[in-house]
Length: 107
Image 1: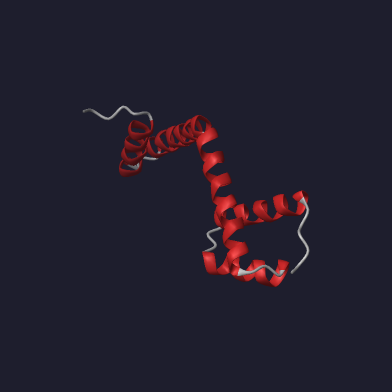
Image 2: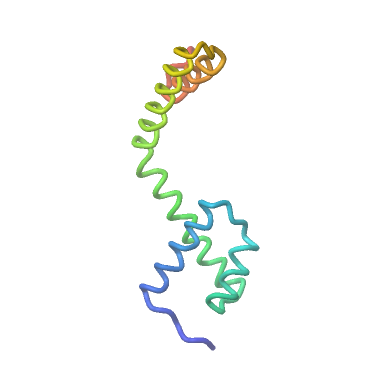
């Protein structure tokens, strides 16, 4: 039986998996990484993946208002630039995104 990791090592591993998930890694890549870099079994890697996904979801839920505000601001910038450059399809797309993000769609 291998030695247990410290709390700091565990947190670092979970954070590494969060970054891998954010960069589009699939399960097999993370399992292979855990086996090669940390000497972990598939089952143990799956436990870390679960913790990482929970952290991703927590971050998304906690920062939801900020993310929506940033997206709205970016879409508004695109809308103005597209209209200025007479790229009306792009302007319309940005306006539609603003409507959806702002919950302004007609019912």
